[in-house]
Image (cartoon, rainbow, N blue to C red; front, side, top):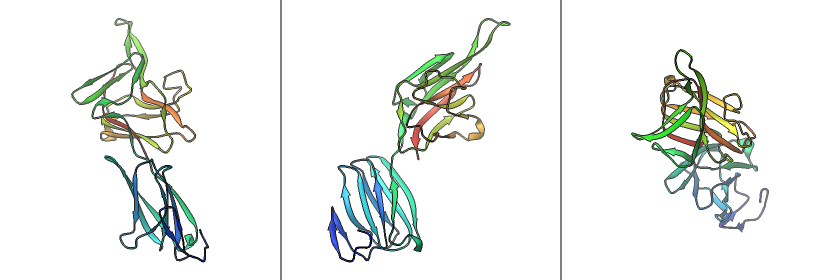
Length: 233
């Protein structure tokens, strides 16, 4: 298509050599996708919902906003086309947040290990990771973890976001092939504290496409009150 000297058709639209550049978008099947720069309308060259691919012919340079919606989920990203992009194809990928805990209610199964527990109460998923064992003065700290029972696919996502009251312990990401739910075995951790202002974001390590996500800690401490926990870009 690029460099074509003749107008033609493809899939759900038309193209011509008047297009400045092209944008190839992949997105979840069934989502609605559109792009605008608050002015010119791009040409839809192909639009195949069966495989979740759409190609836009971009008529001019500028900042274009790519929007997508599926049910109540939305996604927005800005894509810059400059003079140097003339005649080229840019790629964009759309994904929606995947909820693990929503409004204090788990949407997937969670397991516990060591001195850990999790309960639903007052609109929060209350997680206690770690504790103490024994009888004073002979008690000692014990590590614990709360983690997704089944592996979570992370293709298309870059981070895990937690919202709620987060006064202690750590959020963690483990490779799905791990069999030990400790802080030392985690591929990534984020210390939760009041300084996070009720929201924490933990980047998913590059190369991990199947993980377990949860919370880990040692010794007695404050309860992590999870309002929402989800994957995002």
